[in-house]
Length: 422
Ligand code: C2E
Ligand code: CA
Image (tube, rainbow, N blue to C red; front, top):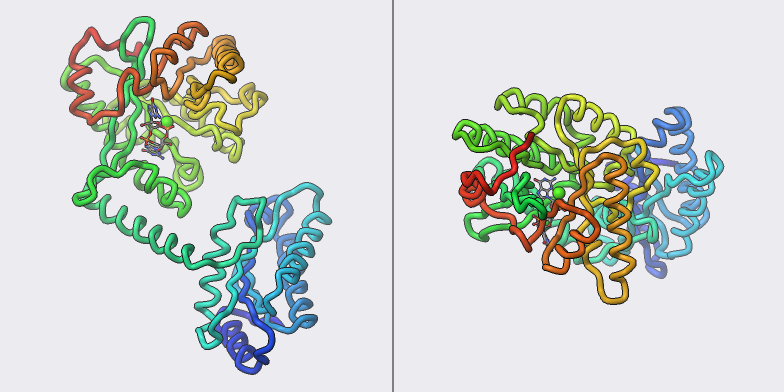
């Protein structure tokens, strides 16, 4: 019999463990289906319900066959208490995957299975389940390994993530976030054509914290939108200030996280900001990382069309970093391709091929009438290579590192260093 909710499942699991003999070890298992919501969208709610009933059935069979307790908890979350044996978990996995395949071949609605091997049977079942869920949450997006066992470090990592999330909320209130600007440079005219805003956390005790420490955590938890909007607004405020001070206007780009595409109305946000700060829209460029184009193709495509239709610029960030399809480029209209910085990282053995690839990207961009800029330009050799292949726009430490706003302002104030946006 399946228990209807968490509490019943936990009580049954505790009662079971109390009575179970000590010769076998047990494990607490948390199971969910990756992208289950999408399954419902694709095949309909009825098919989704059938899928869930099938999983229930598999789990009941498992507990009848090997002894244990199973439970359907919520949405697509299941739990099962079983003797600790890896093969049993593989059996569950295979039975669920077989079912998915019977609905449609080659789709990836696979179960993720988080396992906590029970050491202390007197621990509350809910705490065992929490640990199984911690293991489960480390699986998302990892298709090579779908059964993961809880380890103590996972708890540490999760606690650290929670700390960062909490601290970010406080830091937003205390206005500890700002952005640095990294100029984008025309290597032929020797002038700055724009800048990219890069968020920085100025922590009162820890000093400057770079985005790599907190952005992935906020993204994983769906909380990046608030910070992104904060930075976009700060960028717009600054653009307004520069215009008011009579500086030449340069385009400033902002980064948009893949997650923003789900959690906010991106187009409305930018429209609202441009209006609030009375900004020509061409001064705002939105960098969307390449992986987003692949994962959320239709959505991203329509957002880009709307943004560009409204007059904003859009660039495809990290182009070539591993996800792009050339076919996709045919249907998606962006203003700028930003060549991923890894292309410039070449050793002697790969330099000929690498140069050829960059040249091909540059030519392709020109043919498509799309601007192209190389990221991560660090050395004179890089610059020589870019000149050779006809890539005139560059961003990187060789020219300028990301810098505080005031430093950038001092440069913008020197008219002859700037190529203003037409
Ligand atoms: P990205 O968009 O690819 O940005 C470029 C990163 O490369 C920046 O790191 C920049 O400081 C660094 N960089 C620039 N020139 C060079 C160079 O010549 N060599 C090397 N090795 N690195 C260079 P940063 O500032 O640490 O940002 C890392 C990533 O964090 C960004 O990668 C972007 O994906 C994300 N990010 C930054 N600011 C924001 C933001 O406001 N919102 C969102 N959602 N993401 C942001
Ligand atoms: Ca970027």
